[in-house]
Image (cartoon, rainbow, N blue to C red):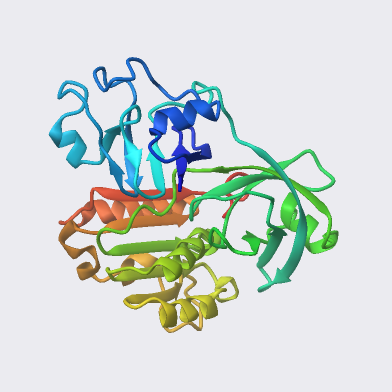
Length: 336
């Protein structure tokens, strides 16, 4: 039985390939027409060095000059030698263009549109055939009836029956206007993806998740995956919004708290006139102990000011995690 390999390129494009038993990752890639960096094929040059972010594999034979023991201990491997023992997520040190591949175009249809609040809309698509992604990634979607593309992070986990997303309703936003005024279930939808380097890595230590506004979407996808696979480590999420009306999806987080042992969360609202019991920005409500002395993976997603402020706050702490992943979005670009 073979294994599924997610190849994540430097430009954010992800391609999934199937690796047959006893086949190396390089052999499977080239069989699929994806020319990842490769030269000697014998584990001697190090050209195909890549980083394995999730999964188990046989390292294979190689020279110390091509891959040192320290590099191997840090998760680096040689694609020409490594053979998967499980499904893998592999970061390739090259762009998708350089590897003669690109994001794939998929066609499906609009499944549903749900108004969550005055400022937030959820929508879902029928799952495209043979399509998968990494929890936390996004797609570039062609807004029906226009030539405009917008990027949205999945709020649903891989394997869900439909592909879910969250949108902030900001008139005259192209996508939010379409969803508010013209959307009809069954309408054909085209998107390119998946893409993005903001995705859930293998959980090897406690997680601190910080979400701003509809930046909650990729964390819902991550939590959906963790609910399926389980986690031996505590997970804490801080979710902040600007106004009371922006606070949506709390019932989903409450449900995850019943499904994932060790998962806790808090919400807060920045507006001074908010009726929420916890006011201010997310970072002001994160207890220092959640950084676990630096032995923690931090994921951060929200609008640029929130991300910049959170990064500054983390930089001021005495224990800084080397495992820090973040995604900025704005209404006209990446809008989880």
